[in-house]
Length: 116
Length: 492
View (spheres, rainbow over the protein chains, first blue to last red):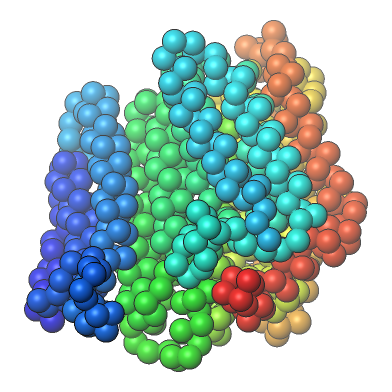
């Protein structure tokens, strides 16, 4: 249970950083923290204490395997999710650079041409 | 059934994107040729799917629930047709419109990625696969919104990127919870477990996360802040794609799949969708009234019209859902048309501000006529398609005894008429400013898309019983019959 609470704390820090900070890079870090806590949550779902790798060997009973192996599917999902997160991060960084080129500032409160 | 068209609808645009990027390094014009051809191929596929029987495709031969499964049912057919039709016309339109931009190859590659993602979202029968395709479509659209790399575009794109990523993360957490509860990410398999298990608190939390994520992607009102910035900032063909099909495919359609096919359409969730829709229709309509930027007004109008669709779908009755889907298809046609019109005016006259236009009827007759057709359709003037879908939505609301939403739907349709009258009054009629004396109409490839969409608005309006009976009523029946969906995937 504790790990889930810790994961939630990472998520909360991410949300705080995303909402309360004005600096674009800090906002991006907040977004990345949110993504990572989500990935961690997916891993925790498939985690089993003292579990073994989900590889079945010749001298292993099927019942023993299903009782002790961790769930491999969330790990595969997280791998995909991390790659997607990387793509988003790269795009966010590119946006931050372009925004700085145009506005000469990283302060999100000064970037406000669109309204109404 | 193993219909090979299903994976190809996703695979061909993906492959085209890679080819365009690789060859685009040496020859910039490759995208201009390959992308419309690819759009035509996927359009032909989607038309071919209309007559195909419903069924599934097992990716890599793995049977569900172990492998990824692509599903085609009556609802999928409607969405596939809408996505590929608008995409093809937007691509044809791009040929002339994008000439003023540099990095055209990258534009077409991103567009193809977005098309692949949208087709994937519509076809997939697997929750995590839905998330992956949704992210492909979303990330491509984040990049396309900021494609002009000017001040406003970058700001809008960044805002859209951050909000969109939060929504995607919420959807992923929802999928994780559903997986934890049911032990499967296959939609039909999860649905089977949920039926046996009944409702518990974790499931309600997952449903809340899904509702938040998909509502943000659809631009429903409390979550709409990014939409009126992002949609006008993108190049016109991309605006047409975003407002025309993207918010519906990854917002409304994905929400319908999860709410109806996975959760079985519980009344509480449907009520939330209904009232979100009512709020969107009203707020979006009122916000449109005060806008002077043509594309920004159209974007607020999208919020309002998506509200109509959500309202109708939230009823959960066969007529309501059929009417909602009919309006979804119509909105793809006329909002796509209106954004392409706005792009055409911007391309020729160089402005989006309604106050600086006037008298364009004399100089740009085709664009003006199609603007008239689009405005009439969307504000519900009788022979055009928008009239029938709004009428059906209001009838469905009254039949379901939802009188307050029905009254608001009528009021909003009057508001819609007012602000489209404003567009017509300021852009087409009135006095031609002196600077536009030498104005001429847009090139043929742009006009082609406008003409096709105008004719479509008219034809759907005239033959609406045919379209209702052959497309939208079966689609509504398909989404409401959860047992058939489950047996189609797990049983076959």
